[in-house]
Amino acid sequence: MSTTICKRSLFFILGYFLLTAFSVSAQQADAENCNLCHGLALFGIATPSDGLRSFEVTSEAYKHSTHRNVICRDCHTDINAFPHPEEVKKVECSKACHISKPFALTGYSHVQQAEAHAISAHGSNPEYSDEKNAAHPDCKYCHSNSFRNEIKDEVLEKSSQHCLRCHEGEGLAGVILHVSSHSGHRTAEASVKVVKLCSSCHADQSRMKQFDVNLTQVAGYERQFHGKALKRGLDEVANCMDCHRNHLILPADDPNSSINRNNIQQTCSSNGSCHTNATAKFAVAAIHSEPTTQNNPIIFFVEWGFIILTAGTMALLFAHILLDFGRWVGDTWMRRKEK
Image (tube, one colour):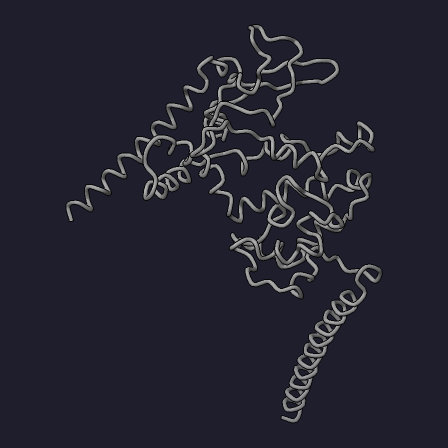
């Protein structure tokens, strides 16, 4: 009994030490005191061409972000003097940084994600104009969201306790930090934010029209099971990224696309929280269906048939009740008249 208690106490102390170490390392990441200026409220400049440009980075936002252990100049490599140059290069998200991959000696990099994004439907197309390519979402457009870049302390603590059951030694801190940055996403709240993020473009008719994208996708998702279940708080329901992937988002006619007709069954069954036993017939079911007489006449007429049948049945039911009530009123009135 005493041995078990000692082990539990040891794990608790080690977990607490790691959490404290994370907090200290987060403070050390700003070793060059960048937040001394950038932490000021409304810190920024105004230019005639760009208007107001904010450079404010609050200490809380920095401390709880997935980049909280990354020194600012690891990404802003061209800033070597103070005051900073007037023209600052745009940060390349695909560059390798000093953080090592968990259990590996190689530096971490977003190169794979950047390459996938480049060939995806969201990447730049040489056949498009600069204005049209600028309408595509870049890294910041999607990743500047709380559900992607915040690490919650309770998630970090829970993850650390779980990892400590098997892993000990150096490098564990990086593993926990890496895992915890993604472990809090499988919630209905996070999925709602995913759908809201994707809808900010895909429900915008002016933006989607220039790409010849079907404008019924968002409404179709919301009216089907996934959208309705998500609104009712079901955590495990599929959001946009579960089916379309995070970075390698390809059109349905591409053979490598996760939503290609030959790959949909695998997509539906690949996530342990989804339809693990999905069959080929199950996979052909409409997901974003917004039926009309042109694109899906059978579903359109079946749907309206059920609406008319339900409405007609209810109308006859209420008519029967009203007639029955009228007869009761008439009989009561006649009996009183006879008296």
